[in-house]
Image (tube, rainbow, N blue to C red; front, side, top):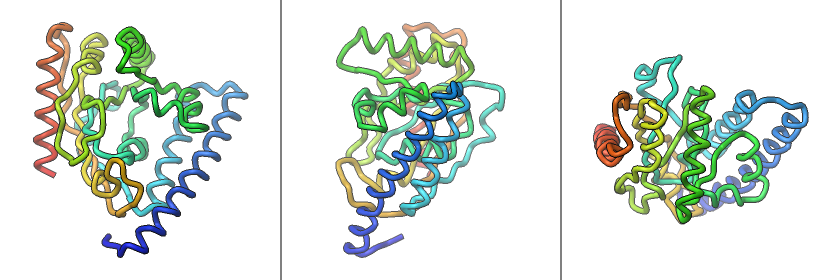
Length: 242
């Protein structure tokens, strides 16, 4: 969808209002659910609905291919490229598995939004503190042991120009420790719709592609760097295909 500048500005202003309204309502619902001691997995519909309504309201519908690569009774470590703030709602809206985020701690400091993330069991990671990062990875391993998948962005930050950055191996070491396969994920269109450090939207569809999972059985922690390179190469190939 190609919009002229004034319409893009108005849409972006509306998007901020829409985001604030949805986040406030969603956070209120989560607080109510917590008061009634609703368990984490049963809260996930709130995040999914938040994401679907957000993307629909700003003209950035998310579509997914490759679901046939996932087994319904399996848990994964989903490893995705990262080019936009819209990557998170895109995955929340359409990724079918019960999953939790392993995300930078700064997101958890956002008023209203951050506390809601914690209540739903999402996991902050402090990359500047090695001990805290290990603790976060242990939390993620416990989530996997309890039957949830985990989503990571191995680049560690958003790519400013869409170029795939090197993959850090810490989150992929989590997959090895948990003995779970890594599902490579390629997100296309989000970086064009809302580039990093931009607030002006350029609405359009977001495409998510899930690749064939990469097994980790038999791997050791010392293999995590090689696993990171393998997963990055899979994601790179999917981006080229898309």
